[in-house]
Length: 107
Image (cartoon, rainbow, N blue to C red; front, top):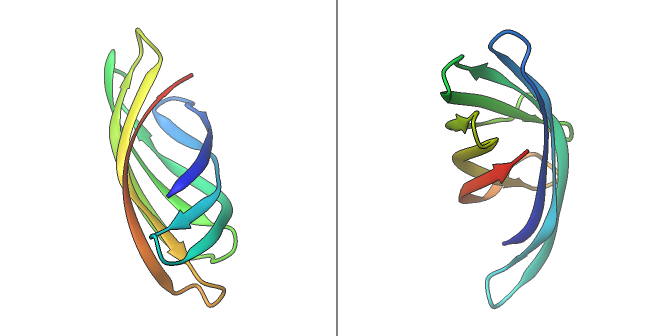
């Protein structure tokens, strides 16, 4: 998968809320398909300097379909490291592929 993933996050009092977007292409060497989607996310973040973070995403296209992510937010550097799985859905909201990811993002 070659894709751009965007997160918009806010952290009011230990609660994590925001949005996500993904756009890219899946290519397994035999077939290609474009991937795009947006949705909401919600979760928690600890108050520590190296804060545990967890959040759940919900697709705009497929309400009720969720995916979980977890990691650490390093407040001193502004780096958020997360891991989880991107699930690619077809128009009927059936999971057609699960793609595990690990990301390090800086705000």
